[in-house]
Length: 122
Image (cartoon, rainbow, N blue to C red; front, side, top):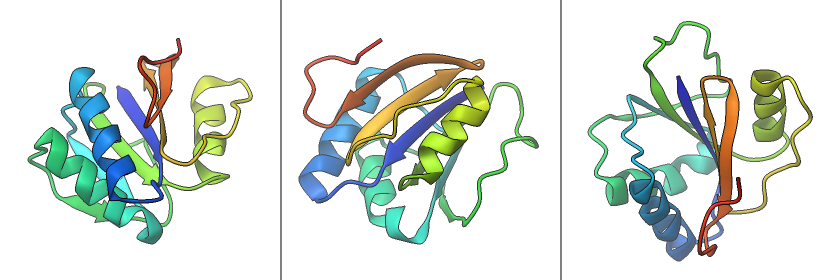
């Protein structure tokens, strides 16, 4: 399973930039989940990556029922994102900055990047 955690962007430009970076990293989601505050960022990212799935608004994120080959994008705020990452990885995760993304693949941290970063940090 691939999980992309995205902290809500401050504006449309940041969200667009995040979407462009996710497109570079082959993000083709099977699910997109967002908290109420994260919906605008999720909509912009989904448009940029040309996602073909609907955005689901959720208050909690339960990954246990997802298929092994699922690719889920979750857009929310802190401390929910770092708590979810910590539970998935089994190690403490530094909170994500505004408009920052983190990718977890098969239970391992792959990378994280800010909306304005040249390359992801591995």
